[in-house]
Image (cartoon, rainbow, N blue to C red; front, side):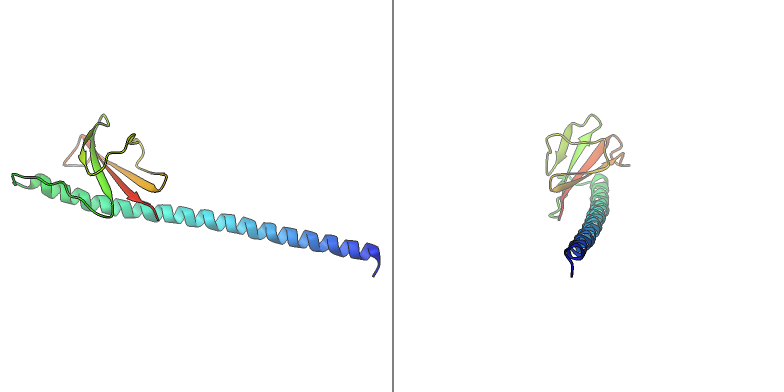
Length: 133
């Protein structure tokens, strides 16, 4: 085998391995982005279900004639109620700067959902937080 043949073979192998690794890297980036968005969508739907449960509990609490009213707490998520001007009313957590303009967003390891205009609390926002996996 001549030196020119060897160098051509090495160049071909280098281009082949480089393009194969690039293709695999692009595939992995696409796959991980897809999985990240799938996980975010799952977290979004999960926190919506959890907030729907909380809203139904708050509706029952609103209809209740009991003297002592206890805010419902859950181990899976934390929630708070804010007025229309983003002033904290009550709940089991108090984030420093809640973003009540977005319906769903993530900050660090937490997912946040802001449910606005609840029928029982028409001027208030329910703000839920759940830790992402």
